[in-house]
Amino acid sequence: MEDIVENAQAALGYTAGMDEVAFKENRLVYDAVERCLERISEAAAKLGELAPVLMPDQPWRDIRALGNRLRHDYDDIGQDRLWDILQNDLPSLSAACLDALRRLRGGQCR
Image (spheres, helix red, strand yellow):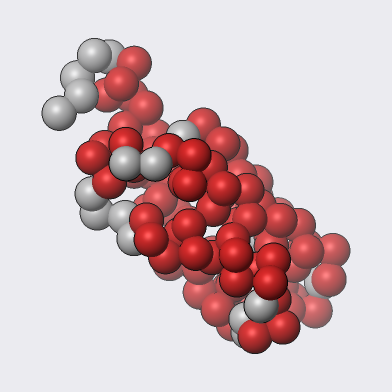
């Protein structure tokens, strides 16, 4: 889960202060975000069945599938989709992982 939080925060940091147009025009930032999303996908796969137990409100199947799509079907993923993930999905995923980590470290797993 630490890898998910770290990469989500990195991607959000890379794009802080950017709007969608600036994001799409900055190839370096776009590529960095894409790589962070691949790592998040891989980390989600490594969590296995623990992920939906600790954070049932996240779309784990979609998160895991995104990595394969980025690696193999990258030309079919629109820039607007990555921007949407940044704006709408990463903040809640990061928050859910942080909450789960706090519960795990505090011995408060459900």
